[in-house]
Image (cartoon, rainbow, N blue to C red; front, top):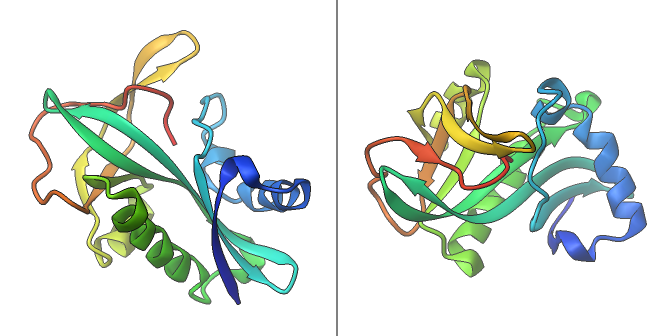
Length: 170
């Protein structure tokens, strides 16, 4: 197993094609009709030349409870179906969280999750802070009703109040 973090702008054509194969098993594939943010960074887990797990990281300042918060957004966390239940996503998420601490030094990690996955992320320190947030879409700002989870990175207390993601979701 090889895990690497790369700038999304520096991915090769080969790496982008491999990511497309993994994306089909993520939330992106199920929440059709939603326009998603483009990754700034990507965490990739490889077995030989096969991409097994992928995570996108998006850097963003959003508004939580009327306060600006620097976020490291975790999105497109997906493992190919035939490779699941072997710890690849767990290892990739550890690397992604380390990356949020250093070099990104964000206030919080933020991800959306299905109800089914919440207990798994809670075991890793993530906490549900809302069940919807405001997001940008091509036709304007709208409510996005899905559980929102955060992880303290540099700050400990998530601000009370609504969340405006100030851009596309991840």
